[in-house]
Image 1 (cartoon, rainbow, N blue to C red):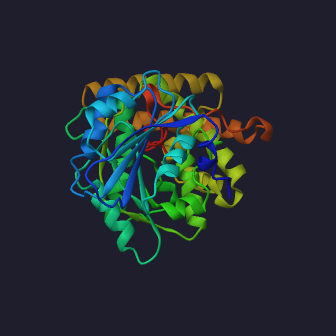
Image 2: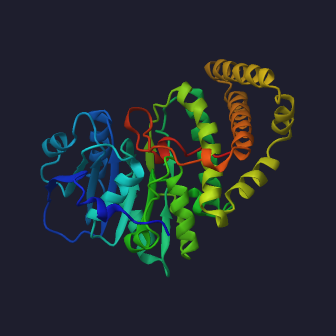
Image 3: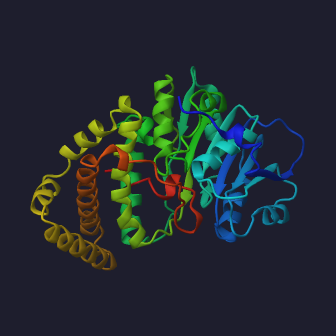
Length: 369
């Protein structure tokens, strides 16, 4: 079990509760925990505004400002003076995992729900998660879909993310795939607070995939995973192409790291099994692109082709081109990471996604190899 450090930090001077705005008196049955850092004001306001339109009333919101250059507490006080919302500010950034742990440490509700600071909640989001957690015969972890805003034409690389994640959610909804710890994304994840504490919270050493690693420890605790298709959040990703092309290598690095930190997760065995069953053209491309020059040439060409095809609304071949890019970048990085000495595969400093996305969905959904 990793040390659950959130409560300890309350006395270190690194985090101070900045505001506690209480709405009408009521019992809080669930707390929504949101970590944020340098998120544009309109995005965070939209995220919070959607929460105030929930059909379920007995919940609170805990916002953890992880050392933003422009503190969010003043904006929250002005925009939501009568709402049940608490804001805690870290004097210096400690990363999304530690920030979410600190948010849970403030909660006394039986359930906690994690969403990202740029997600827009469906009006039934909290109600669906609360019902899933409450009606279960045993302890469960409630998973909800993270979808792209309807009607929005995304850039081709984020379209690829949304397509892959959307197809997986469709399989879960039809019962063709089983909910598992590998589906745990902090963009939309609800859990019993007692279970979260029992497994030690998020591992604060991890800069990526801390949500999946938490999911495995919940699985090891004996918890089941329930997919709630109507517990929806919409995420309008602003990820750049440059950032997107870095994610496969980062994901490979942290898959190897998690396999080392938690050997019984068999993370690499699962990943390699999946890679062996990818399309035969992708497997062929890996062999052809083993020389570095060939790898660079094919990746660059596939990105260009995918972008052009997207402009022409030839979505299926565009998605195939970006699948090729992801597969080649991931498998090359995985080969390098598995041949690297363990000393070099140490947890990186916690980082946030572009313009403040607090880890979780902003970097991960739809990007599994």
